[in-house]
Figure 1 (spheres, rainbow, N blue to C red):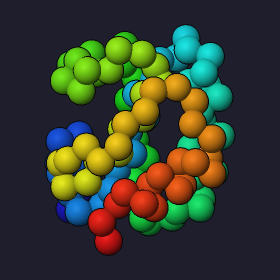
Figure 2 (tube, helix red, strand yellow):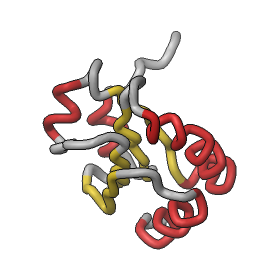
Figure 3 (cartoon, helix red, strand yellow):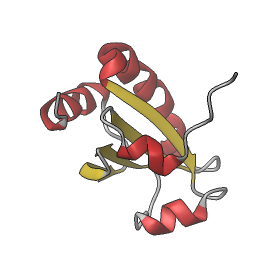
Figure 4 (cartoon, one colour):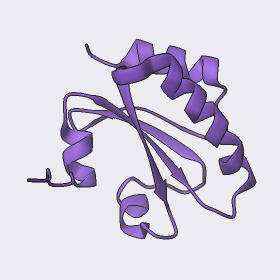
Length: 104
């Protein structure tokens, strides 16, 4: 039997840290974040799950977390916001930030 897909809320409420990238397809800086997020995922492996949320398709989620500009990155763990930043964040800074904020 296939496992049920988790909702956004279930994912951010879990023990695993989740980095959410609120982005828009028309946003230039958002496109710059894609390879940075891929690099971050490679460096951190299972320490963090990375989700991309298109603000145009998910306006409710963007509104709930008061996303005013894109890209906005928010790090969640156990339902709590541990860190947030708007704009392009270099991979080395992102890895350092995630490592210093998550609870293992």
